[in-house]
Structures are given as C-alpha cells and as structure tokens.
Image 1 (cartoon, rainbow, N blue to C red):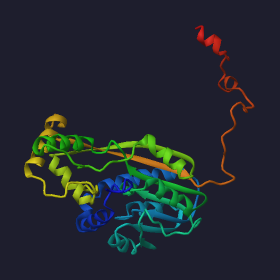
Image 2 (cartoon, rainbow, N blue to C red):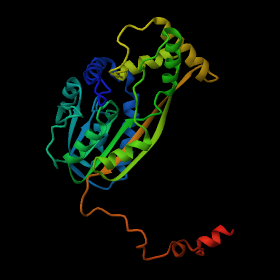
Image 3 (cartoon, rainbow, N blue to C red):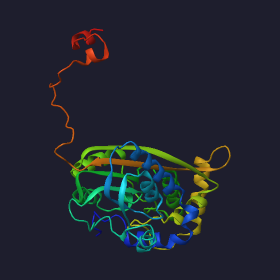
Image 4 (spheres, one colour):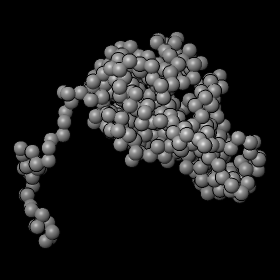
Length: 303
C-alpha cells in the first residue's frame, strides 16, 4: 500500500520541470502573474532581509522582483529541478533543493519566499516546520501556492468522461490544499501571526486541449502517485473536451480555467512581536472610540 503521506511522485515533478525548460518562456504567464502579486505584498512590509531564500525559483520571475525591491541583500534561489537551479546560478547564489528536506541551518535565514512550488509537497506541515526552523526569530515566510478551487472545471470534465469511457475513475488532476486549512497548518508548524488569503486568476482557452498543452508546458501535468499508468484511450480526452465545452464554454465558445492562488504570510516567533491582549483587558471602550452609545445585550435582544 502507498504511504498516506506520499501523494505526489516528486521525481516525476522534477523531470517534468526539467523537460519544460526549453519552451518554458511561452508558458510562464502564471508564474509571472503570481510573482508580481507576491511582490506587491512585500511592498507593504517595511523591513530589510539580509539573507533570503526563494523556493521553486524556476525562470527567476520572483527573484528579479525581490532584488528590484531593494529589501533583500542576498537571495539564494533554489529549485527542485537541478537544471533550473543551474540557470538561476547566473543571477547569484543558487542550489538544487527539495522542499521536503531543506539543507539550511536553524536560524540561518531572514526570509523565505516562493511562488507555486508548495502544492507539489507531500508533507506540507513538515515542510512548513522546516522553513520555520530555518528562519531567524521574526523571520518572514511569504509564499504562494495553488489552492483547492484550481482547475475544478477540468477535474469535473475528466471525471465524467473517464467514468463514461472506461467505467471507472483515477486521479487526473492533482489535489490542492484549501484556504481554510493553510492558516491552521502555519500555526501547527509553529509560526506566529499567520495570515492566509486567496484570489483567482481566470484564464480562457480555445479548447480543453489548449489548457492541457499549457499545463505540460509549465511542467504542471498530473504527478499523483496513484494516477493511471497505462496509456489512456484517445476517446477519453475527446469526450472530456466535449463535456468541458458543453458545460463551461462562454458565449464566445472559449472555455474557462480557474487558478486559485493561496498566499501565506507568517513570521517565526520572536519575543518582541506584538501579542493579542487577554480578553477583558482593554483599557478603553469601543463605543467611545467610534462615538456610539453603548447598549447591553438585553437592550439588543429586546430591539
């Protein structure tokens, strides 16, 4: 039986990332967009980070923005795929690093950034705990990963098509974490002041086949361990494309695809971080602050 913690074939993820490199520039739009949105979040943080790590550096989109921000002195760019790490070595310090086995000493980093690599991690709580240990006190985690509403249209179409064509189903789209879970995972990993939010990047395609081409070009095709290993009948994908168009196509005939992006912001614990006050310890009344009359709960209940 498969270890329940092993959902993804990490070696396959690495190989697909490396195979995507020659033509990746034609499929880098999602990485670029998420990198820009992460950089906007960094704009709101008034801190400098002497030594920072970027996980999942790929084409370097986020790294270029981090350096341009002027807030990072030394950036180490890391990727699961050694070929991507070698490419990033032209920009500065770089390394081939597995997010599930970080080689950094405890308390050695001021910040860890990353765009779109955590969704391929098997033990996400464990990876987050390793990141927290590698951060100095009051060090920053700022990362983005794909969330549970990603590619729901494709998942539905493939599920129905495979059930019709083969009489059974297998994992065709990778599972993704839900927004309601990730803030709890940050707390479980030992982070302070965790915040998780999400937005959706909508994309439209001429057909479902064009979406599948983009996923291969990004190196983001299905890498679930329990995926079907035999060649799938051509009729399966043809039927999936029909269902996709029938159910989701817009007035212009194009089909939508949603990429939900979860943004994780948290800090390694530090004694001088702000702490929430104990309930009932407030020294001023909220009613005074907002200029309103205070009412007891009985007044409210009685209308």
